[in-house]
Image (cartoon, helix red, strand yellow):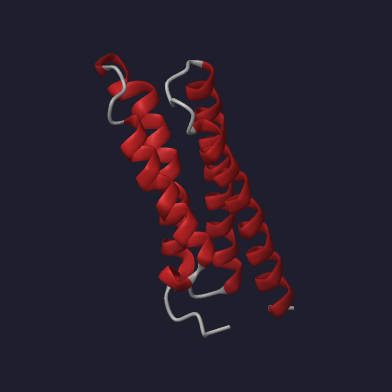
Length: 122
């Protein structure tokens, strides 16, 4: 395994980034009345996952980075919430389960990264 030199080297960031891009693409055809509702909320939540991983990467302390990772994990769960709504409203045309699976995988990866960092800082 290579050395992590940037947040872009983290697989959890790569997956979160890919999820956000997919959510943006999949929500682009939503009804205009949802632009400021479901579309905006889902996009913001999905984008927040990778943003928090990136923002915390160069935090001055492990403890501070762990807070950013916790926020990223919360955003993954918030994204799941919005994706369930989109699924139940039949707005995602079959991609909902893929996105839901991605959110769950990202949350698990963030848990693992957080545990690893917490153990190293002890």
